[in-house]
Length: 293
Image 1: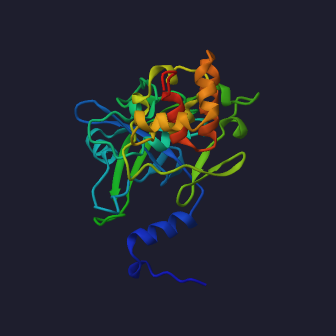
Image 2: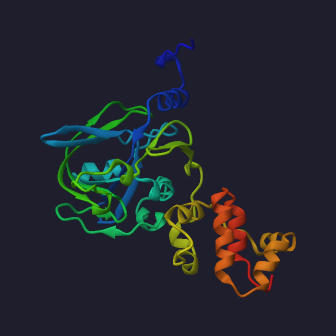
């Protein structure tokens, strides 16, 4: 058996072992606002329910392992003492992952991830439209667990108001665990879907995706694509060049046929298939290709 001494193990390696061993972990998609009222949105898998009376949720924005800096969520929670915790289900997992991108301070991750903001009733941070459950919370206490990279900060949140999408309720008014379709985090790129099993989502931590807000409207507004599709497209660092698109079209009989016809939706559906096969770059080339290529 492999034996690990945390004090003798590099933090990134220890981090991987811990996340791989302790799971699945529920995901808190936490929304806060900064000193200027600009919303911030970020997911945290160090999260759970710890009390019912009073209703207490705790999540932990850890200090970054790579440079020991703190996250905007923690700074905002310290400043305003308010947060909304949005529950994450399968329909929004790719957008949630995209919201974890390290965008600069002042960037609205709601827009980058393609989420719609809903006004809260009792706190300033907005809720995430589409999240099956949303908790408006007051921050009662923040407990620092250390000053080094990887150290957590326990944010103790008291639920002031809870919002539940009625579509996830059963005939008795209770939350139906199949309908809510929750997802959770494991190690690496792995997630777990409560009603099906394991799947992967590429972590967008080393690059800055263009964001859903940069996707052309004809794609965002098409019923062919769902939120997860838009999340994958928005997690692209750069769009293909005209030369790359031309090379793709020239080498694809199928692309030429799709572009020669007048059925735009057929092209979109084929791009959707590329996304389902995790061929995001190819999907972008087809989406941006025009008849004159």
